[in-house]
Image 1 (spheres, one colour):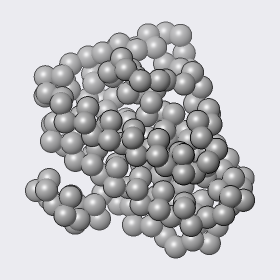
Image 2: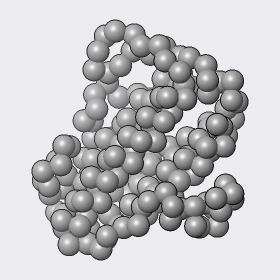
Image 3: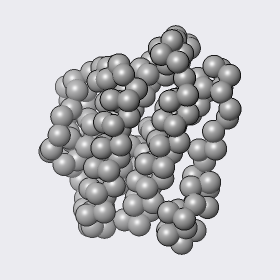
Length: 171
């Protein structure tokens, strides 16, 4: 189980790098253009992904900052947001690398941002959500990029598994 989450953490970092490489090709106007996506613009959606990761990592580890809203704009500048994203991806990779299978099947308790009622659940399920949530919103970002006339991105997990880093997971 731990190896699967290590793979997802590495994939997550890889996919975020590809997405930010594509976003770097956009103008400021395109980055901030309303696209009809849930968080509006590409920059706002990229911020949301980072916000959610920080909230979950704070719940998991007790360390770091956790915004109190899901729509916070941490960085309006793509370069600063990219640096923060890369640092968070490294934090995720390092934390997952230190987990044991017993910790993954164990439970933890947290209070959601959207409700005052504490929730207790298995860590493994919440980790699955963390990575699925990123994939979901990266898909929205992909749509925004193609709407803005940019080439389609190959962000599927299988493409990561064909890279040297991905092949290290034995797939």
